[in-house]
Every structure is written in structure tokens, then in C-alpha cells.
Image (tube, rainbow, N blue to C red; front, top):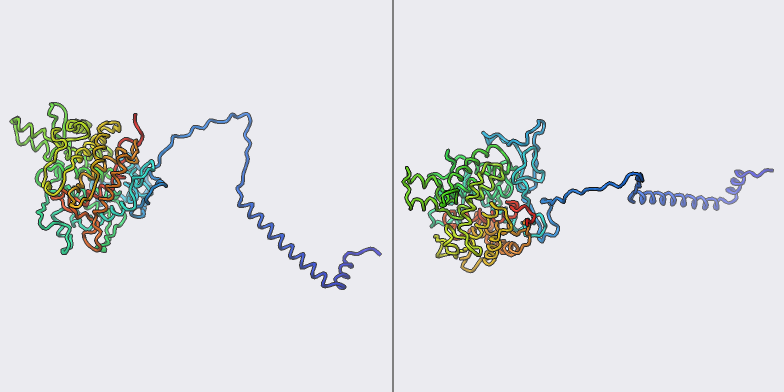
Length: 556
């Protein structure tokens, strides 16, 4: 009889059922274990990087690869910053209509109406643009500004503390803006708490400087990247009020435009060149920030007035500096060629302070694509060199008074800093010549660093005007974006400046003083807390308001 495996298996199961059951249990267990192990190995194989080798034809020689030049990213926040860099608000990008082709060489917006303007860039996190950049627009002159430690990541940039102080300063300015869009020392009484006002009740403030003060306040918002197009809100935590920052800027700019007359200046009675330079600077930055045609004509008209107002060179050819009055106002005193020697002296009279503000306006105008005659900047440079003496000193309006006190109302309460004129001379040279190897810059920096910001017991040494211009000059000269980037002068100055400026900001809870600078300096008697707050916010924005004038690479 032949062997039958099936019959044998049946007989085995009948005679030894328990043995069969045990065998089957082990078989099932081993099968489950094998399936689990196989699945695990497949997952591991999927996690491993896959390498594909492609053979290269032997007859093809290797191609030489030309790497593009390294591009420094201004938007990258250096990882080695000592303090965190922060921004104000998250961008809320409103897309621009791109259904129709756009000529990117043209200005945006309606030049005849501010109420029919395109949404544009939201602004806020970077100077001139949000994180989404410029959409459907010709690039802004100021679009490259960026918070942080600079291109080279060496520190010395904006920090969480300085940006918080800037935001609190902007809140103070929001709180004290007049309904018509302006700011003024004489109008603070209408905005302040009666029990703790932000002004000195004994001081007789006037409206003579309101055009300049309004422009300074606007520059604070523009410097932080906010334009009339910005969509962000800033909440005033003292008043519990939400402000549309774009409306704040737009209302202030419109107030300035309504003040501008056919001649191009803004002051109510006759031109006062501090007012005119600051207003021109605000309008040119408003245009440069947005490229919106609505601001172009008034900005150009303001710049044209500055150029016409420049004093003639006493040598008989070329131009010179600027003073409180325009050139036209002086010439009108002597009609028909009747100017005598005293009149000529008055006509040639210029000072480095007004000249410095005008140069900044002309520089911003050039960056914005407005028309600026180079002969005007050359004249400013000639005047600056004339008032400069050896060893980094600059005279206020004559080289003979270099290092001497510029007289003022605050002489009995405040010490004078002669290095303020050196800082003004530095800024004029930097923004006109663009020469980092100018020996005067090193000499002036060495002088300035010996007169660091300090809050002394009697507070006699406080000079916000000096601190602003010296911060701008040293940041340009050897700050983190400079080709020098040594920090030899900027480093110690920046630390002392931040300690003093932030330390003097009012931190009162639920007070209308909060965020402002209530401690006055020697120049604050005309502008009060509007001036002190605006000038200090501008100082804390020095890290990103202007790109480095030397281009960020060392010149031989």
C-alpha cells in the first residue's frame, strides 16, 4: 500500500491532538513575528537617504563652474547678535491688482488725490516695505532699510530694548497729534492730562515752529517704515485707543502740503529754513518710501526752494551754505543793487546746523529720484570745508569760533558740546563726498568719543541734538554697515547713547507722559516735548534710517 501524506496527517491529529495544536500555535506566532520584522525593515529603508549614481560620459571634459559674486543679505538677522531683534507688527499684505501690465518706471498713485491711492506695500517690519516687499511698484529709494546689526553681523544694531522705546515714542506722538494732523509745542495743552501735562506751563510756546515739529514727528513714522499706505494699527495703551498708522502719516503730510505756498516754503509768515529743510525732508522721504506721485510735486517744489535759498559763495563764484533766512529774503532788503558791505556780510552768512539739515533733505531727494543740482551739494561742501579747522573741530558759522560755545538760552542750565559741530561736519562730508578715507572723519570721531552721552547729576550735559547727529555720523563712519566696520568709535558711543536715551524716556503707567522725553535739553525751549521726543526716536532709528553712504565695502 502506497504512503498517503494526507491520511497520515489525519491519523496524527486523531491520536495526538494536543501536539498538533502546540505546533500550529508556534507556526502562527512565528508568522506574525516575520511579518512585523519585514514591515520594520521597510520603514527603515524608506528613512535612509537614497543615492542615485549617474555615470558621466568619458568623452565629455568636466565643465568649469563660475560662481556668482557673494551677495550680502541685508535682511538676514545675524545669529551672533547679543540681543534679540524685534519688529513692531506682523505684515498684513493686501495684494495689488496685477491683472493689467504695469510700467514699473512710472510713479504710482493719483498725483491729484490722496484719497484714491493704491494699497501698495503695507510697511512695518522693514523700512519701506513689509516682509512681502514691493508689489507691482517701482522699487522704493528706502526699501533696503532693515532692522538689525547690519550687513556684516557685528552687532551694534537695533535691539529689543531700542525698538520698544521707538514704539513707545511713536505712541506718545500719536497721543499728541492734533485733529488737523499737525504737532506743536503750543498745542500740547489740548492733548495732555491736566494733572500731569507734557509741557512747561511757564513757557510761552508759539506756532512758529509747528511746520518743523510736524515734519520731525512724521520722520519718526517714516523712519520706522510707516507711510500713508501702511495698514497696521498702533494701539495707544494709555488711552486705550487704536490708531490707523497710515491715516496718522497721511493726515500729517496733508497738513504740511496745505501749508506750502506757491514759492515752495511752509512757514506761515516768511521762510524759516529749519522748518523748510525738515518739511522738505519729510515730503521727500514720503515720496521715496512709496514712489507715489501725490507727494512728488510738493516734494520737488520744497527742494527747489531750498536750492534757491542757498547763500552765494563770498569768493564770487559758486554756492555756499544756508542760514535762518532764505537768500531771497536778504536780497529783498537791498533792491536795485543797493547792497553795501554789511548787506554782503549778511548775504554770505551761513551756519553748519541749518546746512546739515538741508544736506539731509537734498540727499533724500537724490535717493528718491527728484532733481537736485550737484552745484548745490558742492556749495554745501565748500562751506563745510571752510568752517573746518585742524584736529576735527568745526566752527558754527566761521572757522574762528570752532570749539567755542554757540550762545543760546540754555547757557545757564546746560553745558555746551563743541563736538556737536564736528558731528554736523562729518554728516555733511559723508553724505556729499562718500569718502571713508577723508582724514577729517577720523579726527572728528576721536574728538566725539571723548565726549560720550552721560546723564550727570544736574543733567547739564544732556544734548539730544548732539546725540542725534553724532550717532548718525559714527554709525555711518565705522558702524556695522560701514566698510571700516571696526566699531572703534561706534561701539562705545552706541552703548552710552542707548543707556542715556532709553534711560531718559518716561515710563509712567497710564500717564500721557509715557513714551515721551520729558527731560529738556539746551535746545528744547521752542519745541518742548514734541522736539525732545521726535529727536530721540530719530536717534534710536539711526540703525536703519539710512544705508551706509560708503557702499559697505572698503575703498582704497
